[in-house]
Every structure is written in C-alpha cells, then in structure tokens.
Length: 336
Image (tube, rainbow, N blue to C red):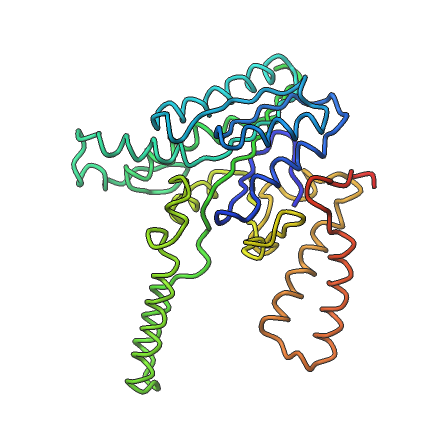
C-alpha cells in the first residue's frame, strides 16, 4: 500500500497485531536519510522501544518524541500530547521542511471526545439528532461535531505548494480497533426471513450468530483491558471516512512473535490513487499485486481446492509472498 508525501494514513487492527512495530519499521526504512524530520507521540510504556529504533536508524538527531502516560495523566493531557506532536510537525512544514508524524495511539483523542460528550449538557437528544449538511451529506449534529473534532487531527496532513514554502506533513495514526466487515444485523434478518429453514435450524443459526457477536464485543475480551485503548468499530469507520487511506493488520499476527507481520490486502488501500502516490517503479506493480494476492486468498477460502486453477494461483501467490516478505526491524529499501 503506497503512502504519498502529505498523506494521512491509518494503521489499525486488534491489540497485538504489530501496529506499533510497523510504524517503527517505517522509521527504520529511512535510515541514513536526512530528508525528513520525524515526530513520534507514544505512551511511556513504548518510549524505550521508540528511542531504540530511532538510534538504530540513526535518526535521533532529526526526531522528536512526545511522551504521555495513560495511567498517570488525564485524558485531556494525553490528547494535548498528540496536539503537541502535530504542532511541532506543523512548524517544520511551515518552514518548508518535510515532517513525518506518528500518533501512537489515537485512543486518547477518542476518549477525550467521549469525556467532552459526557460533560456537555447544553444539547438535548432532539438537538443532537438534528440533521446538518456536512461535505454534501446530511448527518446528525452529534456525528457532525464528532467528525469535525477528529478532522482537526487528520486533516493537518498536507503537501504545500511552492508559494507556501513547499513543505509537507505526512501523518500516520495508530488505532486499536477494526473496521466493519459485515452487518450482523442484516445477517440475522436474512435468517429470520428464510422460509426454507426448519425452526430448529433457524434457532441454532441465530444462537451461533449471537455468540459470535458476543465474542467480538470488546467489553468481553482483552481489548477493553489493554490500557483502555480499544476504539469501537463505529469510530474506526469515522476515521476511515476522513483519512486518505488505511492499513489493516491481520489477525494472523496475534501470538506469532514480531519477526514478521501481515496486512489484509482487501481492507488496506490509499484513496489518493496508486498513480499519484507510488514511486514510478512501483506504479504498475502495486495494484496488480494487491489484486492477485486478494484473489488467491478468496480462492483458498471459497474455491475448490481440487481445481488446477486454484492450486496454480495459490502456488504463484505463495512465491510472490516469499519474495515480498521482509523481517520486522529490517525493512528493505525501495531500490532493492
């Protein structure tokens, strides 16, 4: 998934799927380069690893780390740490430099917004549900205010023109949460409407669906206990609609160690277009590879494994994955 200068990009996934490791590897990929200035906002628990990575990449002299403590500081103080990192990067951008910002993680902004909503009592339910036109869409006042709040963070990324100094701010936001993959409610309605199902089978399917939803409820799992950094699916979708692209880390990374990590190609994309953000040498390769790998994954999941075409596609994609695989902490330069 190519990322362009001045773009905002989400890195999202469940806890333990190597989101922070991927963000740090992006810094390592610039080892020896003096083109960019880096600003990294993190929790105190990750501070040692961030500093170690910057030292390994020989980027410490051109980097700033803004640290907050999730256990010792208020939600407002942690949100202020994100704004501090952005303000430093904006100074670099406005002076004509090129800044790269990593906000790890965005849960502090989400939780601060939720705290504002809890304390704000000047609007009643009728006022908050009033429809407003935002970016050509009619949405409820509450959703409009939330969108504006999150936009104040993500839309600071930019590539300035020559008359404004030519600087840039590229933004990576780490989110512990998952996008919407399928509508469970719609699936339940379809089960209820299916006339050919026996009552016992219908009840069995609905029970299995209910258990699946319960298992994915963050209040029942370790996501909610992971420092309170879990972000709801609805909020993840809101961030997706504002950002310029997103990368979803695969659940296969859970418990696998941190030597390698995978992403979900079908749910990882750039909205600016590959032709606008990819290096010329990668322009044709990116889209074709993403399509081929996703088709192979679908064929393995839903295709007939006895068919020669399925086996051939799986073998080809397997070879391509081996060629593309990189070790964590040792990213391969684009030229290589």
